[in-house]
Structure formats: C-alpha cells, structure tokens
Length: 220
Ligand code: SAH
Picture 1 (cartoon, rainbow, N blue to C red):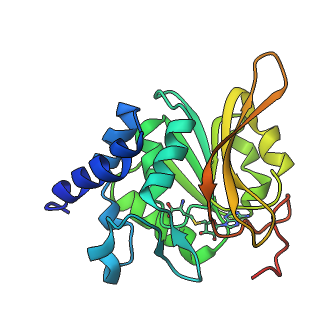
Picture 2 (picture 1 turned 180 degrees about the horizontal axis):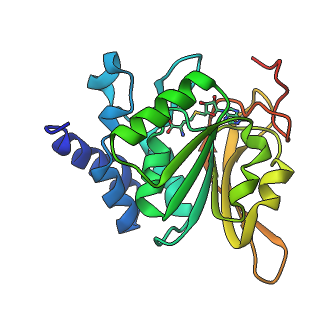
C-alpha cells in the first residue's frame, strides 16, 4: 500500500487541518491509516474524496472530516477502551484503534462485519475487535467504555449505550428525526453525575437500525 502517503497528507491538510481539526494525534492517525485499503477496490481512486463513499447494501464509509470531528470530540489520549457502533468498512475503527488502547466495534450486517474483521486483521490492527450484532444494545462484556462512537443516526440515544459509558466518558452520535437532517452530538457523563450534551456539526448518516433505541428492523 505504498504510494498513497502524499494523498493522505493532502487530505489531512486540506480536509482536516484547514477546517479546524487541531489534535495532532488525530491528524497523525489520518496520515498513517491507509484509507485506500478500506474503500471498495473499484473506488480506490476516490479514496481521498471529500465525502462518503458507498459500501455494500446501501451503507457508506463516512467522510474523513466527519470521522475526524468524531475522533477529536472523543478526546482520546491512548489508554482508553472504545466502543464503536456501525463498523462498516472498519476505517473509523482503525482510526480509533490508532488513538486508543482497545476498540470493540459492532456491525449488524454479517457481510460487512466479516470483511471489516478480515481487513483489520490483515492490516495489523490487533487491538480492534469486530462483532456482528445489534449495536444499539452495546457490547456489555467489555463495558464500561471511556468513549463511544455511533456511526449511524437515529432519533434518540439508545439507553444501553448510555449505561455502558464510563463516568467521565464521551459518546458521539448523529441525532435527529427519521428522514431529517441530523446533528452530530457529544454527550459527556460528568464526574459530578449528570449528562452534558453539545452539538458538533450538521450531518447525514445512514440509519441506526436495532432493538435498543434505533429504528425497527423493517426500516429501509
Ligand atoms: N464507521 C464506518 C461507517 C459506518 S456506516 C466506516 O468507517 O466505514 C454505518 C454502519 O452502521 C453500517 O454499516 C450499518 O450497517 C451499521 N448499523 C446500523 N445499525 C446498526 C446497529 N444497530 N448495530 C450495528 N451496526 C449498525
């Protein structure tokens, strides 16, 4: 996978740094994780486009900037245990795995879960685990999580995820009514108890589909 470093550096400079991403660890992760290895092969020449790209079954690999805003908002310093809901290609999981100690990522579509798992293993992301299942229920065996990234949008926060967020932990999720524009929101479980909610940016994610607070299984 050599030869893509200049494209990654340009992406980091023009799409991330110039738009205000400041965390040098985050910028470094986007320089080293090979995005070109996470996009479908026939779209490799568009790997560094400033937008999402299609995966299978109507799902998408998120825009690099949106992944960067999420990663920066999670305030990862290295020792954290992170939960991701919506593995998709595994790209965001690889970014999070570069920034934190362990990542547990849940994907509901079996084909995506198994290809992401194989890809992450092949690329050497040994601290990222992928499970096929309903991520609105979280991954209770490894809770609590210092950070949770939800990569699919819904009208409300699944209660199980909040229950698996550590004290002091941060959760980032696209929230909004079905079919409407969403807002990427950071929720912090404060040490004094209570939750703080901060809007980060307007976004448009694929729907979160599941029992624990997403859309029901029959949704498109
Ligand atoms: N982070 C991904 C982008 C994921 S797109 C990347 O970097 O490529 C959102 C993903 O969430 C889709 O793959 C979709 O299948 C998945 N998803 C939707 N609802 C889910 C649920 N309840 N549990 C787990 N995954 C879910």
